[in-house]
Image 1 (cartoon, rainbow, N blue to C red):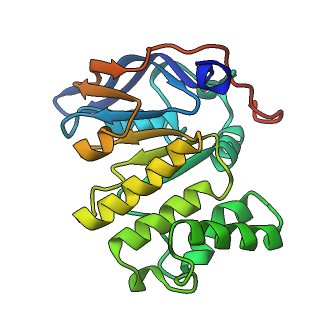
Image 2: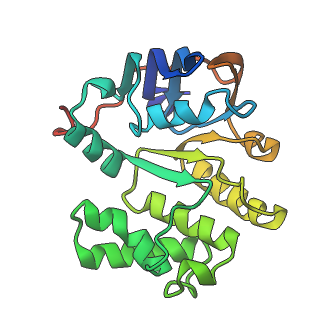
Length: 248
């Protein structure tokens, strides 16, 4: 492939995350090397406690590594200031979580709008974009509903729309179907399939083989390291350059 498919959105070298606990040191992520190619879907599987969610949090700047290097495009993420890291997350990364993480007091539309408003986008444009996204995920008639009035599958679709509102470079999803029944899981799989067809870059941590089967590349983790890596090549071409102003 050529063009954007050959570029790296994320690159990790020797990435480690360690925690000191009673009884010894826990190596949650233990010296990982990883390239995430633009326009591709990467799935990470493994048993509970293997480090896959910790890896996703490191890739998304939600946690800082103990050691190693992490690049988002050409920018060294692990060296960014807290302010620059927050800006990177806000503008370039969309997050989807197992527990949805919607605000109960906000409507579906307001939940989708929130990240864009925090990024200081035009309120009028944000309202339009949020409505369009909710229509795209099949919730055009539910925009004024609170999360408590939505099913689990509908709440996750709101969360996916929220992840897309700032038009992120990459979408990181942590067990996005973990709390869903089979019918709702299929809804999310259809949405991920549409995103993949549009050329979005996704990294998905999952226990669900149906989710993993939709990926271009599958990595299995065990004890903080990669046990198996199948699919596309491990490396990709020239780095993607982020907009100016995201350095620390």
